[in-house]
Length: 79
Image (cartoon, one colour):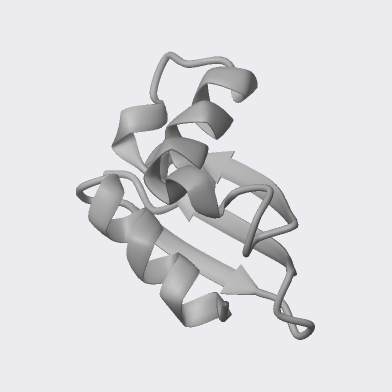
């Protein structure tokens, strides 16, 4: 597994999302995800949205994923 594949899966699974994913060992990753879909949601609900885009890869090919989830306004990219 690589960071770019994870980024693509997240961005495909959350339309309009922008993700930055880092991880050098192939199993432990860090991601910052900015999505309008997070508006009004608590952190746990935001994380579940991201995990849903990765499905069975979580706990398997992706051993650990540290998430930072932001709305565009929180990220300073909102209008």
